[in-house]
Image (tube, rainbow, N blue to C red; front, side, top):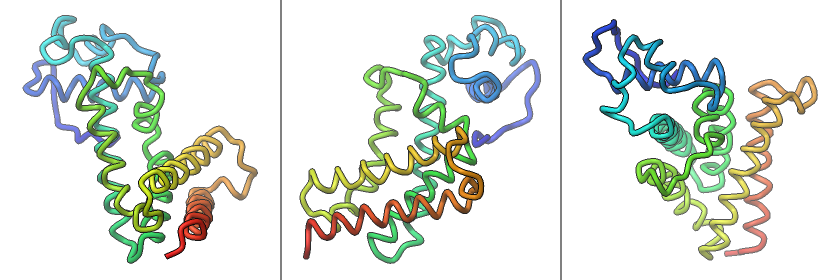
Length: 204
């Protein structure tokens, strides 16, 4: 898990962190919709009223975890694009980092995309997701100068990586092509094909 853990016992000095860690464990075990807030309390060893000091309800706790997922994605994607020397390489590196995150952090990936949260209720969650596009859009604009075309390129690259991650996770990719290395190579090839198409449509 990506949330940094600290030793804790029944009397917690960092209640919010303990609740988030415990909820993350339960999501890993049972899925996003497979636990109740009362169960988080029991496992964390705190009273049933303790979470309300930090979270209005179960959805608010899930929103905090989803926002953490987006921040972790931002950190990884930023590091990935820093390895590229030109925009095409950077967007391909983003696609590779995307499928790698999905494989390495399945729980956080699930939280980001399957929690079914109303993002308008959680500004931090909305801002965390928007920050990913804000980071990547300037790169896409260097390939497709038109704002709509740049957005379309970025969405198509992300959608291809997302679909590949899901197909691989669900076992729909034939044996031999379902390894982490093969999945990452496929993500890069798909991104490169979309980038080449965008460059043809928007020659410099």
